[in-house]
Amino acid sequence: MSAYLSLAPWYDALTRDVPYGAFAGFYEALFKKYGAAPSLILDLACGTGTLTLELARRGYELIGVDGSEDMLAVAQEKALDARVDVKPIFLHQTMETLDLYGTVSAAVCSLDGINYLPPDSLGAVFERLRLFVEPGGLFIFDVNTPEKLASLDGQLFCDETDDVFCVWRAELTPDKAALRYGLDIFAHLEDDVWERGGEEHVEYLHTVETLTRALTAHGFGDIGVFGELRDEPPQKGEQRVFLAARRL
Image (cartoon, rainbow, N blue to C red; front, side):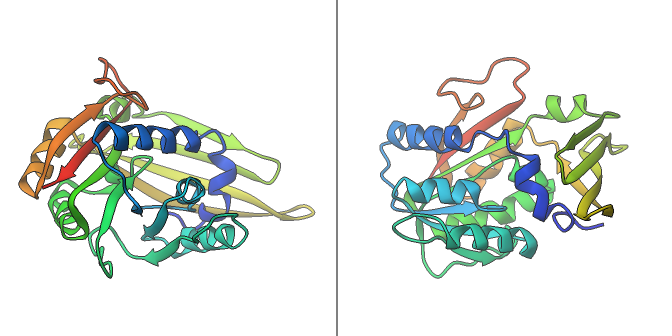
């Protein structure tokens, strides 16, 4: 089962508690901390474009890139009605095949997009970013910590609205290197008609040390590690951490 097919039309409804404004505000705080003033920002693994548009409303120009055509279709539709000075550009590309027409002054990857990369793909993605983030530009991203992902092993979760019911199961792989999510989605089409869809997601357990080594090996430095949406070091047991790195 592929990821973000059945889920795409319902992603926004099922993630309505995500604080996109807080993410954008935190990125701006890190821009200031690093003395950066980006104009053109890459939103890597942009999904349905909610954060892309939030940043666009704050005056930045955006390029949104995602590997799911279905998620990008939702993003493009939302952008048509968005009140922004410059509409974002959306491109259908995987992180590993990122190929822009020029450089950007900053890149962000939000909501554990980097967790979707297997360990042997980290270097390739960071190398692509090295090519397209201008020298001195920032790359900011977050990951679910290994502790958080491991704690989800064997858990069952559900979420619902009036029109969709989603249940998902989490299971660590035997080598404990990744967490697999099996999703079943029941969508209300009309009257008493419901449609069932399913897909699988895989998130890999990346340590801060592994990420830092990969960034350093591929042209990034001045690396900072932060707690969840906080300009301070992560605390013990942190569920999500952010990393910021400067393109050398």
